[in-house]
Amino acid sequence: MKLLVFLFIGFLGVLGVWKSMDLDTGTSDSKTLNLSINNHIKSFDPAVAFNDDSLRVIGQSLETLYQYHYLKRPYEVIPALADGMPRVSKDGKTYTIKLKKHIKYKSSLKELKNREVKAQDFINQIKRLAFTPLNSTGAWLFKGKIKGFDEFSKIVGTDYKKMLTTPMEGLKALDDHTLKIELNRAEPNMLYFLSMIFTTPVPEELIKKFNNDLSGVLVGTGAFYLKTSSEEKLVFEKNESFRKEHYPSAGDRYANTQSLLNSSLERLPFLDRVIFHVINDEGKKWERFLNKELDILSVPKKFLATITEPRSSLKEEMDRKGIKIKHFSSISSRWLGFNMQDPVIGKNLNLRKAIAHSIDFDRYLYVMSNNTNLKANSIYNPSIPGYNPSNQLSYKYDLEKAKEFLKLAGFEPGELTITYTTRGKQDIHFIEAEFIKSQLEKLGINVKVETVSFSEFLKRGRAGKLQFFTDNWIYDYPDAENIIQLLIGSNSPGVNKSAYKHPFVDSLYSKLAKTSIKQKRVELMEQVERQVDKDLPWIMLMFESSYILHHSNVKNFRRSYFIRNHLKYLKKE
View 1 (spheres, rainbow, N blue to C red):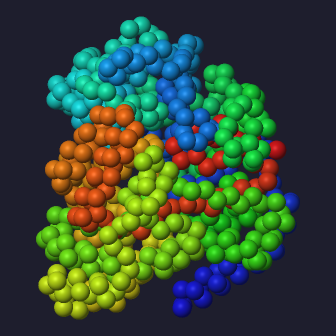
View 2: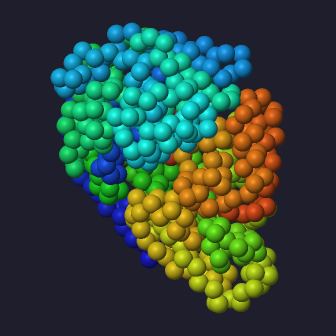
View 3: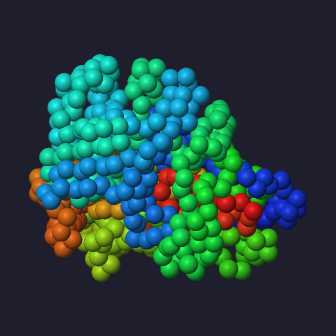
């Protein structure tokens, strides 16, 4: 009750701030876009950077061979730095890719003056993914797939100069503008991999100048380049030498009905400047958006009630001021995770079942999203091909049944204490922790809440040092394989924070990675789901969505979860 009163007072305060401001008098540069990120970027290295803030920032400068069409769903891969789609051999194991010519890096370094992108630059970066000292979060893309990738790591050791001079069997530059990639087996998701920032080109000159430490340098070919960087903000300027690219002239139904084709065939980018402001406080973000100091804002969860309530005074005022409110389904899922190697919780299926049946999922949706998200019914997100909308999980909220399972697990009410670790230190993480704690206490399980930063959560989770936690996954590409990797034994320690290991699931994942036949892939997905549901390393909570606000002078906006270079499509009037 105290929490509700606090939030209500907060909303009234925001409303007061809103009404005390004349938003029409706010300064607005029609060529500068102001955005916010939660944390300062620790590394610009495309082999290392992998959180949402990092990819959002470096994606404005770093390009890849392929990209996603901005206005089409399901997502469609199209050329970026590649000059057309790849020529793929009949067995699916060889990709031959032509590069666009005369594409230059934007850099003030004398070593890169007038330097054009070459096929070898892509090879350099894929080698860097395999280079053990970097501990790249992108190595999984090609491990066991590109010929010689795994062996390369062992051959070059920790010597980056040897890394540059040692060939990798499956990578060849046939000439400066032709790249050949040879695989051990056909890879259904290869085009998705070549659309990820992990595979951006990196010139040898840059690697040598900085001794392969690219954490503090950002050099690319994109629509914008990094002008200045500080703890408070990152300023990107328009790349005047950006290749000729035009706003798309076709799109799906949403693009047509939302007038997203008005800029068709106009030269990109439209903006002169993009500024990322580092703001971790949700209240400050909110206030700065209302004050027109930010152009676009993902609505903080604690303010969802004021946005989604049709008759709220704040929403009416926003409508009057022309603030655009848009709701998008996210390609992300949220669940409770167990450490399957933990001697208490991981080795006791009945205990996990007890906890699964003790969660009031409908109440969780209300507390966490004001009922704007969807209750999860699968480990797969609805946006992923093969998702079954009629799938039913083996657990649901039933406190009496939960108590029966607790007894079968060998515990009396009040006897057991487990540790729940938060995913961060924002308000929503505290709210979530208190909710989970209250649910389990009704069951008779004591919960110790351990509060850690998001970076610490990732570090400890990937080291297998959490007991019970909430996890979340934003898909890297639109395929079930991307989330199943979080359940594969070889990925623990690593992204498999639950340390779940099952030979059958591992074998199914291996088969899924080798077939491109749609129906066969769906069958494999279903088998994985059944086994995971039986073992219960996860309790699925919800499929996430987001409310985005932007001022009326921002044009062409569409939430794009896989499209990191989307700011080149935006316009301000």
